[in-house]
Image (cartoon, rainbow, N blue to C red; front, side):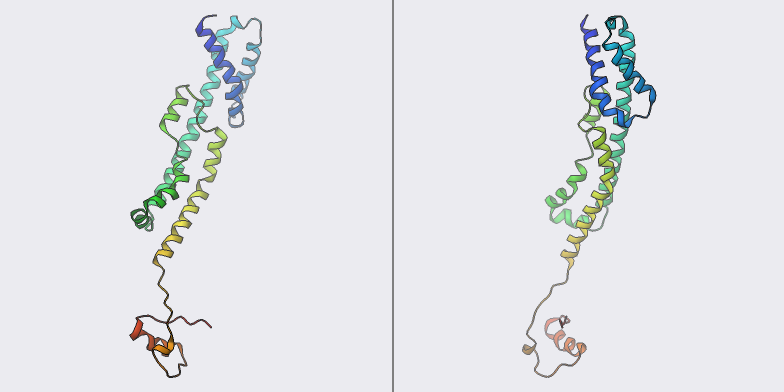
Length: 204
């Protein structure tokens, strides 16, 4: 056999083993399963050398099906996480955090940004040079996790904003300001305000 035939057989074994293992749970097309079954028969046949055209046809069908499913999941995942990141960045609390603490802002977004994928990865799958950095199952899991990860970041963002804008609490000795009896909250506030600019919060 020449190098072209040897390369075809390698691709065929890849299609029936690694590719189909990944693709089977995500491929509803019965003709792809039929192509895999036919390939498996042809590859163990003693006359496989006479069936190279059929082997090439079925191999292409399986590999093309995998590429379509991978790229579809890749794009859906990318869109979901781009949308989540955009929503976070558009929140009024985000600008001040990014300006004052860019490292923390970047850290909060990293679980989302890390699931965007890269064009290099997608192109490598489309060109048949790789099966991709993530499995199909991993990308489906990422899709399911998008809303939860976004909510987690938004909750943390709100927590930080509340902590940043929380009014200061100052403790004072009441005896330093007056020595007459205080019977109501209003009387206490009226005495404190001229001296401190604050109202009181009485703990009973």
